[in-house]
Length: 135
Picture 1 (cartoon, rainbow, N blue to C red):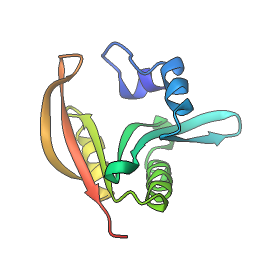
Picture 2: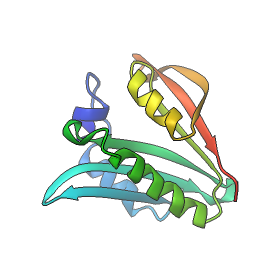
Picture 3: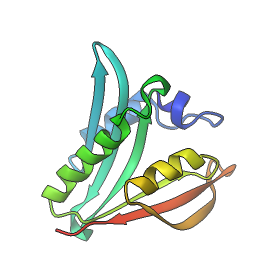
């Protein structure tokens, strides 16, 4: 799913093995959406409790269930659990060639704070976004 929906056009770096390894890390949280036995979406976030921040690593939602609120629910669940641990600042990178994804994150309260040239495989720029929340 990551290769098809997030890393399309690039060499896949987020293999099932890498995602599983990330989930074994006690600082990482993940959430999966199922419709029957079909995975319709997932998200992965790593927490940095020492600095009260978290980094959304991955968010993927199948095309046929987009605009249903699933992406919002996945990110919301991760943010809520992070806030329970004292985290108040969230960050992410999104492909610069994905204006729809950028608009989605803006609707969730994220704002652009910078750009990273060549972030994805020295080919594609990333937009850095952050969100800060009150306790």
